Amino acid sequence: MATTTVEKLKLTAKEVVNMPVPALEMHIEDAFLEVQSEGFPEKYEERATRYLAAHLATLSDKNVKSEAVGSLKREYSGKNVSLQNLKTTPYGQEYSRLLDEYAGGGSDIGPWVV
Figure 1 (spheres, rainbow, N blue to C red):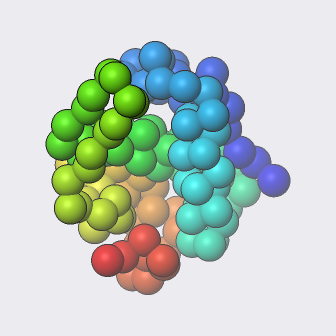
Figure 2 (figure 1 turned 60 degrees about the vertical axis):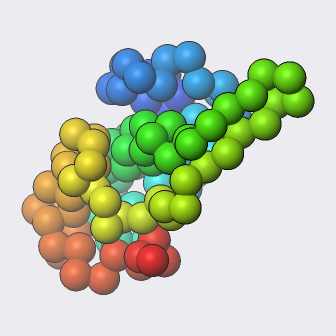
């Protein structure tokens, strides 16, 4: 079971350095499940997980429509996070490359498709 760490995720994606650790751990867990379902060889699982987690973490910030400090309100746009938008971040692009090269091309990208 090869997974990544919050520290490695922060080194890969500087944009996530100030995100709460529980949020980053959640993105790592979600990414790892997807990577496992894609059948990556074990030696590439950590790297694929790290790049997909970075993609998910940075993409989630792009879906924020408005924020408020008073009652900690955060409103998101109607877009769902999916693997269809891997090209929207450099981390998603790298995950897509890894998927194509090491996991059979991503013809079935699992439950992430909207």
